[in-house]
Image 1: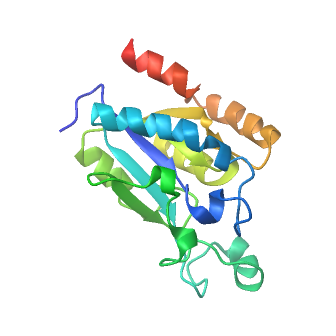
Image 2: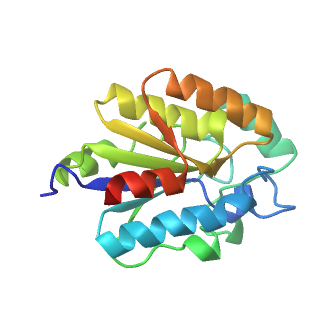
Length: 193
């Protein structure tokens, strides 16, 4: 069981299809966050704290994608299809043995996944969220985390949106529900004392 001061890192949707420039569903700011996410990942690995790689996957026929995305997925560009290079986690952040991979097909990392069960089994009450992108998967994962009773922190410089304005608006909203919005350096300083 985890100690009360232990945290879990939740890295959201850092897959080739959403991160690499020119990919089908590239989030403009995602690639630039890789170094900060890697710093957080290295810290959690060093402390032997749990790491969850939450990824998005959809069936190739689109039968499990959000209805609002179905037309674009089928007619323009598919993404997050299991077994494709695009659905893989970017090379710099690939999981190592002992890290958890959670597959979702909705915005939230909690909806219809085992994330909540696994966090509770590990005794985790503090979660740290980063990845892509703010108005969708980051936001809903954070709001659901708060709703499930977790103490949530957001790493602002390790999280992305299509534009800085979208990021800033979401950070304000997320902070207004009581989530700690910190840079990685601020979070690390707080953990180390």
